[in-house]
Length: 476
Figure (cartoon, rainbow, N blue to C red):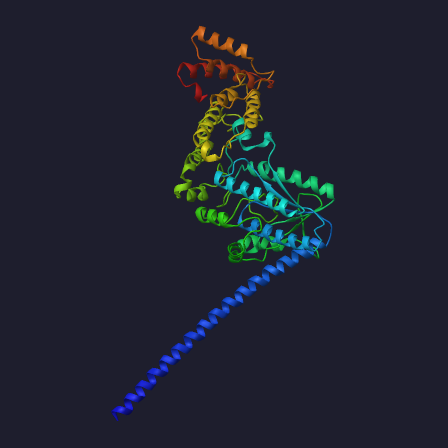
């Protein structure tokens, strides 16, 4: 009886072990099969997207524009497009030009800027070596519309949600100008954008609302005779990342981009704009290091956690100063540029202080900036022109820049000549007053030059003299 019970027990144990082994193997098989199925699905999606792009390319003679920011979505679209063009070239069907259009605002985060221009250089070399019918075009704002010209030159307060003057001037307008020119030249163009429904519910609803023609194209809102195609709009976030990690870029690789995303923890990038479904700049994303549209630049804050990127802290501190100054009304004039009473531009001495501080930071960080200035000589000259309109006849911006070895040679017929500046400096010394008092008085008079009623000028002059006597001239 005992032996029978033991045999039954052993048989049961062996059966249970067999069942467990069989079950685990079956689960592993299901898991492996599921992975295989998922992999096949992803491969099919890539091939389907490329086939769709090829059909669109061959459907007409309309040139293509691929907007490229260097971020994950635009990189995916460009990667797929380049692979399609290589196939079409082998077939002798690469008949029309594809433009790679990118935006340089002049105030991008330095590590992003270095990465971005490195990518563009790689693309140019790859295009040349493979004789592809592609062109790289970088658009940037006119010097009169750059961030520093407007903030330091005209005294615009740093942007916020209610007065976001930067996006249009730095991104949209330069891109619109270029795209309109090639659209007019070719009668029509097709833009390829890296927008996806998976990014947010709002984005998905926005994409679905837009009218599409029989080819799935959307008419652009602002650029004439331009249509928009979103080839990866149905891709998920994980599908984009899987593609970038598993497929080497034709022009190099995606490893440096993946590293930047990892360090910055940014799930978006501030694209070239002109994207009908794009969110406005100012989310958690890589972009301008001076951005004050967000209350805190989280991508920069995350970057500063890394030892190799901590050198950018002075830039982040300067950005925070810009935000603080915006809401400190003692830094702002009491009249707007249209002459109305109200919180106006930054005061002249604040603009001068910010320019000097910016150049100080630039001098300290120049080795890390790969020799690229934070502000160009052209911008400084334009700033001086704006300051001249506000009564700075001593060409202070040029003097400040040359204190930092910029060696800018510039003179205006309306500004004081070197001899006149020497005279005023000598006169101030003889009278025992600082040249800043004379500068402020000249600016005060200049402010009223176009006003029919100048009744307030005497009160303003009195305020300047009183502030000077109290040692508070910069507070005016």
